[in-house]
Each structure stands twice: as C-alpha cells, then as structure tokens.
Length: 78
Image (cartoon, rainbow, N blue to C red):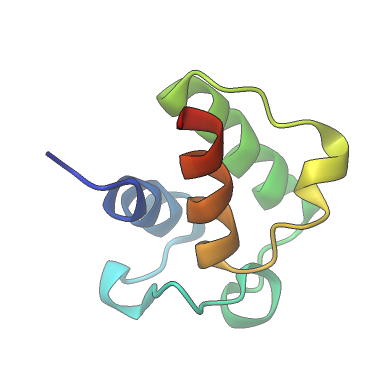
C-alpha cells in the first residue's frame, strides 16, 4: 500500500513539475519548489479529494514542509 508520503510526493511532483526524487520530508514547499499561493490552493484541494479530509485555512498556514503536510494528513486520518 502506498504511504501518505508517497501519495503526496507523487501529486506534488506532478503539480509543481519537480522530480519526485527531489521531494523529501524536509523539502520546503515555498523555498525549495517556488510554490506560489495558487500552487498551495491546488495542493490543498488535491489533499481534500485524495484523502477525503477538510483542510481549514488556519491549518494551511502551518504547512511549510512536505513533512508538515504528511503529518497533518496522517493526523486527520487517525
């Protein structure tokens, strides 16, 4: 079964046009991949669709690294 990280890495690579091998838990969405606010909105919408969760606006502010996103999703699925 694909892990949360692998799923998130897969769609981030596609959305941001980044080699999946360059995406790690420590990757910073804004600084490492030059994601803009539209990219973040796309990511959140994909998270909500893929995992069947809701991501409130105040939570988005705390999602800086790929690891933050993975931990957030895992906490919502637990």
